[in-house]
Amino acid sequence: DAKTTQPPSMDCAEGRAANLPCNHSTISGNEYVYWYRQIHSQGPQYIIHGLKNNETNEMASLIITEDRKSSTLTLPHATLRDTAVYYCIVRAAQGAQKLVFGQGTRLTINP
Amino acid sequence: SAVISQKPSRDICQRGTSLTIQCQVDSQVTMMFWYRQQPGQSLTLIATANQGSEATYESGFVIDKFPISRPNLTFSTLTVSNMSPEDSSIYLCSVGGDRVYGYTFGSGTRLTVV
Image (cartoon, rainbow over all chains, first blue to last red; front, side, top):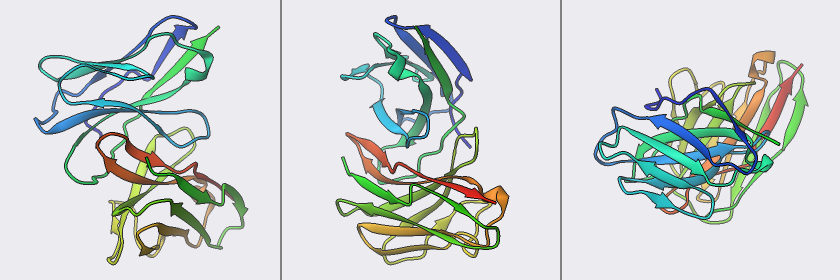
């Protein structure tokens, strides 16, 4: 079973920041938080991951709370191409372990 | 990150027949994963395929229905056997575990069984 909880859907205006929450209250000390997205009819795409520090890359920012029980993915300036299903996943870093997908958040960017 | 070529991209098949999906990776990888995504649903892991050993199947999936081959470190196949309309889904392969890039997914095979 997935170890994360996400809202089923969210809307955001184009050009605004999209903030996607994720709860992972049972996360273990050695587990990372990963974010993927799936644009319609494509395979999931890696976005970002983190352990306990905030992370930023060219796509997004990830803020993990101090107790690590929740996190927020931020797309700073959402575009129509960011419309997708976003998945928050936790897994241990050691080895090539399987990813367990929850239902994700369907993010719709509106013009 | 690895680049995956998955074939076919889509197919329409008659019930009772079988379809073999191929996944080719541009680098050697230890584990490959096969997922199913039913219409409107999230991804469900079917099995993990290691080179040189039997695949490990998740609960609800059996080898007779979804036989997997892993002849080398860059290639795997998934066969959907004795298909029924309920098998209509997108099937995806995945590789990864690299801490920087995470997992890479193929573009998927959209299967319709009629």
